[in-house]
Length: 214
Ligand code: 13P
Image (cartoon, rainbow, N blue to C red; front, side, top):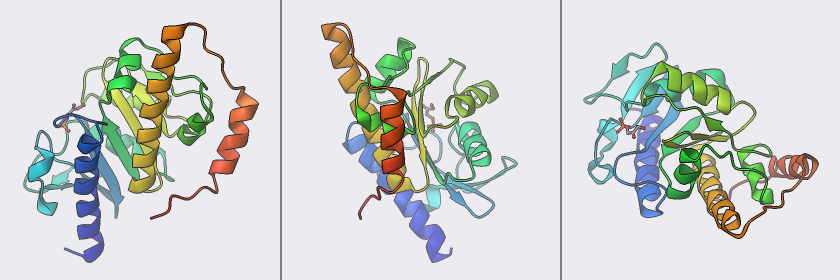
């Protein structure tokens, strides 16, 4: 295995462990992929993150053919389809974070309650309509909800974040979960005041040059 591929596999495992440690996810309900060569590297289905070794990560070609000692995540379709639809994207993180999932159950998109929504690419984080996990239909809904955005919610399911690197995608996922917590808190006190589309557009522009430091 080339050093570059090994590094990506290790980074996927580290991100899985981190998302459970931080509370972004629980159990094996999330999955992560990173673009590699003509395809992608993706977590195996239903394997405890604590036992993952680099060889457990599955390579998936864009036609859906898997290479590895396990089956790919049951959500491989949306990982593959998002990477195909978004050439600027190199990582996809899916999790079931509590606040995001609560809003997704209520079918409530996250509005511009805080300027950090610009991390998700625009003034809203949309909700993709419900479809059974792993399905072609769910994948189509997710790709549509992500148009012009780096994150979306999945109705009665969870959240997806995407980005140019895995580190940035994890950052986006954490920020969107924080926004969801803030929005849920505001809803409890009544009417929520929002920033305008212009105010968010100005932050999106500023974020384009905001690099995550190692
Ligand atoms: P996998 O374990 O197959 O990745 O799927 C878990 C899940 O919750 C899908 O949304």
